[in-house]
Length: 438
Image 1 (cartoon, rainbow, N blue to C red):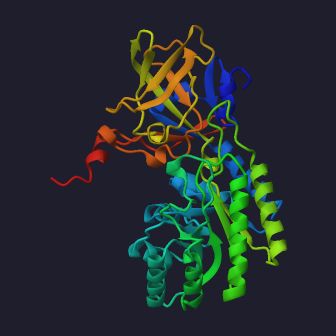
Image 2: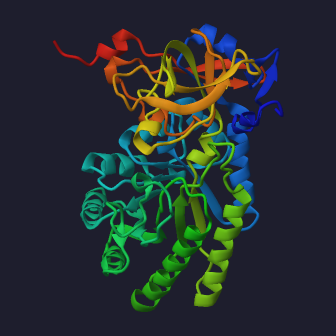
Image 3: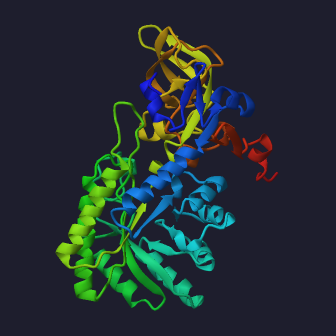
């Protein structure tokens, strides 16, 4: 893995053999030949290692800790089964994510239901399934959930999502914990206290804890420390004024991963140390019992495990300005560069150490000028049919994929010890049109 620094961004099983990129013991050129491109590869070993690392690093510092995977990063049935096997819970935000979890018999007691506009149908589905926690986001939902639970004569455990007003210093589109956010009950204006009082007065809702989520990806630990301190101060006030006992505290997720060689992310241990210290010190200072700590990694579980493979096609050279090389994918399978100005690295999978290097921009094939996956990257001189591998593609690429330009969503394979298993077939034209009514 020492031949190129970019290889450190790939799954932990990545290696170069005969100048080809291998993932999970599988030759990526053979995978592309068998399954076509664009192709997404998930490395099972890396995925399981990330699950274990979060459980270990947080659990050894605070034994009463539950790690729940943020499904919005990407979920399908095979991956949900692995997460279950690894002892994680799930953070779901829709009936669809709930349906995937139910289809693999994921324990509902380890599932937390998030979202700022849960429908009555979604809440009914959650109640019927026996979901572990509903993370209530607003007064409308608080009242609606009380009504639905009352109709079912069912008592539901809930957390309240609070908006602590902490800036995590990330992209404005992925910042969720500041005052101007659509999510949660705000702390400064009294909404959060009013929500606590209403929840405690409810006959069908059991308020067990508080939640916040600051944004993503967060490369610093300080925002988590600030948020935990604010939530603990609030919990202490609610205990004094309303008799509220906080049994669970969730500072959310948003942990960063390394997308670029020059921008490493903090180790999981750093996040764990900072957050657990803030929790323990704050509880001791305020006279609170230590609650269960619930964390919600998504990107940091799935991101590094995923690799995107593309074939090169046409190129366009603008003398003195830039050379574009077009790929057979783009913003339909990875909208992050266009939406968030996200930056990636890449390697030439079929000639990892190729000569005659040049600087090119890797463009997508879709009809938007903003469909450029990577600007100005140095690679071996490319020819049509070469294979480009983009690391750290496991999170938020496929989850936000679309059928723009009537593109077919790519196939996904899971690799381990030299074997590849198809876990989602490539869409067909029939799939594309099957819901149309003529």
